[in-house]
Image (cartoon, rainbow over all chains, first blue to last red; front, top):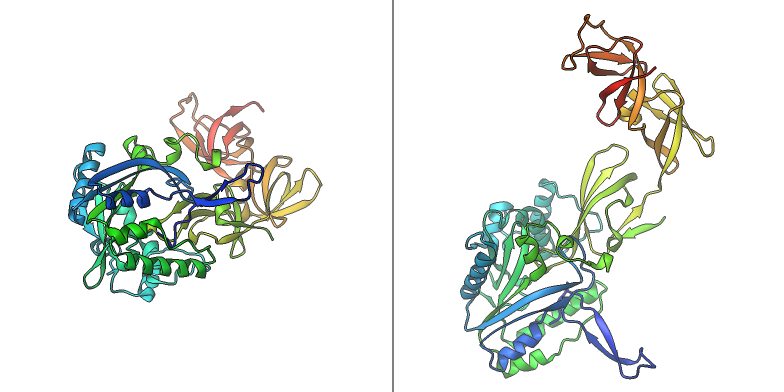
Length: 280
Length: 189
């Protein structure tokens, strides 16, 4: 999977210890998604994994380049089934009750007063200005997604999951990542869990068409190149597994460290992770 | 001029925006919707003392501000101009009453303050946390009244007015907390 905004860390596996610079370039996983989907294609029915994941350049109160991820897939689950499973898990772990479901459009209408699927960049820019969001001149948000993400972080997210967990679903098709897209306007079968304004998990009713994934990879790579980032390999064993046949399933990835943080009533990862990158 | 990239952003950084120096008091990395990385920063204008919220994109940069702190001795006041001297190199600096903000109330000749310079020009001054000042004028206290819950306004030798317990008299030396502007205790002359 080539993601426009996820930067993997690369490592070189030396063939000869005397020449460590010559070797095979590999990537540290940004999530265990690839391997787990290959397991699903090989007949997995309900699988989970708790593992380390790595993302370059992500550091802050809620981010660390190395973190623990919990990821699961269940065969034949629709998006509604996946949201129910996630809500049940959040309810039993955090004891804040079941999660309310709020569509991406409902959340924007409620907290920002705008339809995210119909409005354009000019409207988003005017809304940001009128709500006092000050951005640097160099912040060229360009497309709708850039503006939607800005508005999401400033106006919508702080309101989500405040009394009980909230699951946001039906994302714009342009933010589908690895989710299936349906309908008109086209919506991605993607959902995210929020607790106290913090994003805790991200799920997809999984894309199964390898040709759609190839096209998304191509688009993500051209966006990366336009932003001066290195392009990433587009072909993978996942694509081969998808050609062989990926069963219908819904999968979710959850940030384990954030879960611990929320369960402990802490406000930053530094309170629950002893050595963040700045003290590594 | 040096600049800071978003990956260098942290609390305490001094940066320049639209010609003014700012102190970064908060910086949060966010990645809403798995999209572009944003840095939500809270900055304090070191000249006006106002807060600014600013969102930047990963990879953006802010110009570094040439901000230094020196120990400066207060020399004298000339109407609304307050004159200081850098104790290290005897360089003199002038600040207006407005630039001194609350500090002018506590400035006494010879007092060593901490002064903030931006591009070698003074932008603010901070007196020591506790200063001893003489009461220039107040209403006389009523005989035998030593209760501390009764208060009255007094005028200090600097011209500033503060609230004191009712028992203090003209000519008393009192210790004042410059951060809160509160009377602390009577000091020995």
